[in-house]
Length: 164
Image (tube, rainbow, N blue to C red):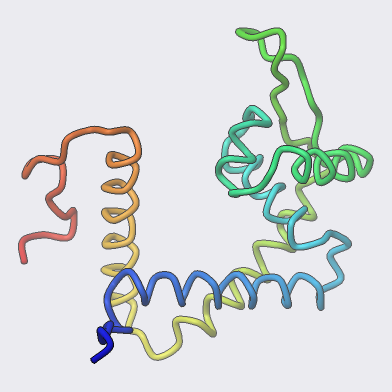
């Protein structure tokens, strides 16, 4: 008899939600007046969040190849939304920074994301949304520790949302 797997585990649900959310974001950006591809929009968001970030770190955060990122950055730079500047600590590396010209584009992206997330989270009370946000932060923090090889202890894996 074949092994039966559960489809509603936390991992499976997160995978499904992530895939569906990415698709919805892509469709929303494509249908908007924002003249960026979804990949370019995600790249711009990462640069804005970091306030200045190495190209290699952006590629890692987005889970894309450096050559793909380079094409996104070329276009964003041509639109004067980002600048590549030398990294003061590593002359071989470039840091990417946001420009003031990106403000209206980021505002438009934020509005699209806000509207999308209102649809996605409809039916959830504000307290449930906040609990979910805190729980996802804890999962992210735990996964980052696992990626770094940091041993998990009771102290550093306790949920910020309180006891079980």
